[in-house]
Length: 605
Image (cartoon, rainbow, N blue to C red; front, side, top):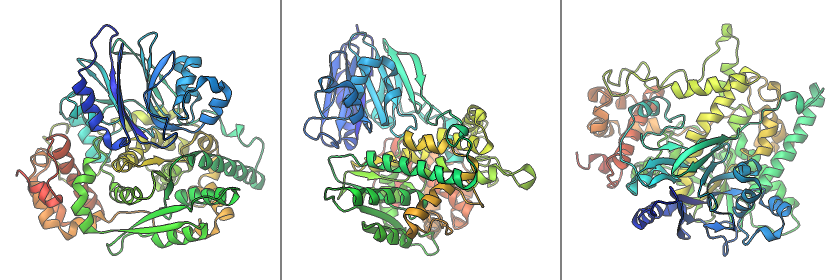
């Protein structure tokens, strides 16, 4: 995994100042600590920082052939097949990213259609001077663009564009409203008005420093259920679906294990990571070659009453023959490192799961360089309760997902705050309109989550927290082979008897009964409200005194909110304000964190 950046400009323009390019490279060093390279060409300046995973000796970028030059952040899992189809003469290195370069020479701008993997790619066509910017269909890997005086700048993280001085540190009140109410920002616009996301699956053609066309690949296949299980019903349908998902999971996990460095797994105790571990264990047992032991990590918390599936995860790891470690995350650890954790979320998502993810990544990075995780299982196989609620008849309590904001009804935010009159649901509403063609209500709700919640919260969190420690994250459930099966399942194989992920549960029952897939699950909930309540007096006062909080909320009500943080809704709102206060200091005021959470919030008051 790597960091990429650069500028696409007119072929007659001067190269970007080297100090700007060096600043981009320095800002992305954490994404690629194994080396940095800058190349200035006619029409493009390319920056790459490398985290070596495949072809450790020969895979430095940029990669070039007679037609183009490429920098990429990603892994292409069908690289062996592409090499086989194009022949050895098309390749100079063993880097999997070189297959994208070779495909471009045959397919032109359509080359991403043939990629299987996670990627953000910048490709400079040396013949035309054009630049193609591409992002994988699920949005596993990030990519951002900004129009500047030097041309169209791009980078793996907005912070790189800010630190290089290419974009001003300004804040969009509309995006802030979405962040506060949803805890993430949907759509292509970021919280920085001058920076936008390349959308999942999008390829931008940049000519003379401006975007001239867009191509977009869907994350989910558009084929129908009948194409997957034609004419089958009941037991026969379920048996066939189990065989298909078994083949897909084994194929995907096998591809995602491809690396020249050690890898491991984040194991939550839930269905999704259990499926990944089960496939990894079966592959290891079937391999004729001795293999390194499986490594797994789980987080647990010191707060009494917190949802805790650490014991279930440990039992599953033992059954799979994995070397397992449970990491205890304490309140003291969180307060000591929270400014640093929030700082890595430059594109902000106030998901409290960033806390255990960051700590797990820090620990795992001492042992491995690649982590597999179960992200995507809930979205593809219907794991969330909101899916079941959204598909009930209206008379049985049907609910519209994302209908209520974190602060609705709490009377904390100022009515006259900037952005108060904006529709914070606008991005979700647009995604709902785009998903209207989906065949069932359940599929429509899934499509919205895949388009917005998944890339702009879950995958963003995984990318930033792992890359902060130079660790690559891989998501085998978000693979085209798996998605093709999941999307085409009938609703009865996704939700049954009040339980989501029915087919995955059936698969686990067959191959890993120790996972107890039909037992009630506690879920993975971080006890952030409990921790805040235990320090409510001190934290509430410090947060209320921040200028960025006083602009949007009543300080006296903020103090009262923190005192009630042990209640679910109040705890969620207090966390959102705490996150925003820390985020604003780092990314809007450009203040380095000054110690623990208390020292950082007290600094410069």
